[in-house]
Length: 87
Image 1 (cartoon, one colour):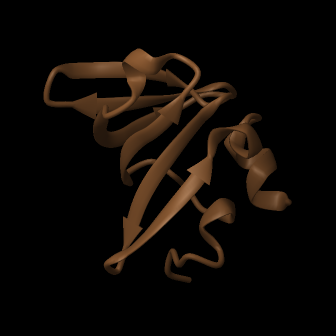
Image 2 (image 1 turned 90 degrees about the vertical axis):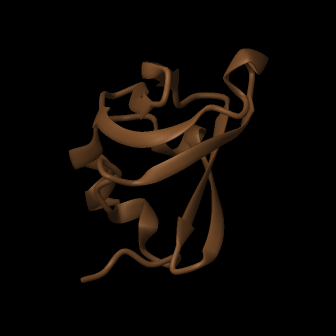
Image 3 (image 1 turned 60 degrees about the vertical axis):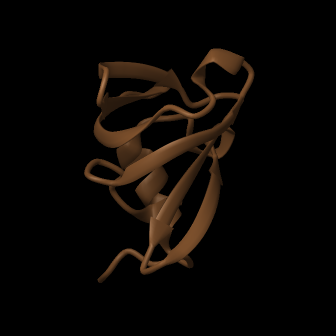
Protein backbone atom coordinates (compact mmCIF):
# COMPACT_ATOMS: atom_id res chain seq x y z
CA UNK A 1 0.00 0.00 0.00
CA UNK A 2 1.45 3.34 -1.02
CA UNK A 3 1.64 6.27 1.33
CA UNK A 4 -1.15 8.65 0.45
CA UNK A 5 -2.78 11.69 2.02
CA UNK A 6 -5.59 9.53 3.36
CA UNK A 7 -3.45 6.89 5.06
CA UNK A 8 -0.32 8.86 5.95
CA UNK A 9 -0.93 8.67 9.70
CA UNK A 10 -0.81 4.88 9.65
CA UNK A 11 2.44 4.79 7.77
CA UNK A 12 6.07 4.71 8.61
CA UNK A 13 7.43 8.24 8.70
CA UNK A 14 11.09 7.31 8.39
CA UNK A 15 12.30 8.30 4.96
CA UNK A 16 9.84 11.16 4.50
CA UNK A 17 11.09 14.66 3.78
CA UNK A 18 9.40 17.17 6.05
CA UNK A 19 9.48 20.87 6.82
CA UNK A 20 8.64 22.22 10.27
CA UNK A 21 5.94 24.81 9.58
CA UNK A 22 4.89 25.60 13.15
CA UNK A 23 6.35 24.85 16.56
CA UNK A 24 6.16 25.96 20.16
CA UNK A 25 9.92 26.34 19.88
CA UNK A 26 10.06 29.01 17.19
CA UNK A 27 13.70 28.14 16.46
CA UNK A 28 12.51 24.93 14.85
CA UNK A 29 10.29 26.60 12.25
CA UNK A 30 11.76 26.22 8.79
CA UNK A 31 13.92 23.22 9.60
CA UNK A 32 13.67 20.72 6.80
CA UNK A 33 15.09 17.31 6.30
CA UNK A 34 14.50 13.63 6.05
CA UNK A 35 13.09 11.75 9.01
CA UNK A 36 15.79 9.21 9.80
CA UNK A 37 14.49 8.00 13.15
CA UNK A 38 11.46 8.31 15.35
CA UNK A 39 10.97 7.92 19.07
CA UNK A 40 7.82 8.17 21.12
CA UNK A 41 8.11 11.95 21.38
CA UNK A 42 10.54 13.08 18.70
CA UNK A 43 11.51 12.82 15.08
CA UNK A 44 15.20 12.81 14.21
CA UNK A 45 15.71 14.81 11.01
CA UNK A 46 18.79 14.65 8.83
CA UNK A 47 19.19 18.26 7.70
CA UNK A 48 21.86 20.13 5.79
CA UNK A 49 23.11 21.25 9.21
CA UNK A 50 23.30 17.71 10.55
CA UNK A 51 20.87 15.75 12.69
CA UNK A 52 18.17 17.65 14.54
CA UNK A 53 15.86 16.24 17.16
CA UNK A 54 12.38 17.74 16.87
CA UNK A 55 9.67 17.26 19.48
CA UNK A 56 6.40 16.07 17.95
CA UNK A 57 4.22 17.77 20.55
CA UNK A 58 3.33 21.30 19.55
CA UNK A 59 4.98 20.97 16.16
CA UNK A 60 3.40 20.87 12.71
CA UNK A 61 5.19 19.20 9.83
CA UNK A 62 4.60 19.70 6.13
CA UNK A 63 4.99 16.62 3.96
CA UNK A 64 4.72 16.57 0.18
CA UNK A 65 3.26 13.42 -1.36
CA UNK A 66 2.83 13.28 -5.13
CA UNK A 67 2.93 17.09 -5.36
CA UNK A 68 0.22 17.32 -2.67
CA UNK A 69 1.21 19.18 0.48
CA UNK A 70 -0.10 17.83 3.76
CA UNK A 71 0.27 19.40 7.17
CA UNK A 72 0.60 16.87 9.96
CA UNK A 73 0.15 17.95 13.56
CA UNK A 74 2.78 16.34 15.71
CA UNK A 75 0.43 16.15 18.69
CA UNK A 76 -1.45 13.26 17.08
CA UNK A 77 1.82 11.43 16.40
CA UNK A 78 3.05 11.34 19.98
CA UNK A 79 3.39 7.73 20.99
CA UNK A 80 5.30 4.77 19.69
CA UNK A 81 5.18 4.36 15.92
CA UNK A 82 3.97 0.77 16.20
CA UNK A 83 0.99 1.89 18.32
CA UNK A 84 0.05 4.59 15.82
CA UNK A 85 -0.08 2.17 12.92
CA UNK A 86 -2.80 0.21 14.76
CA UNK A 87 -5.07 3.24 15.25
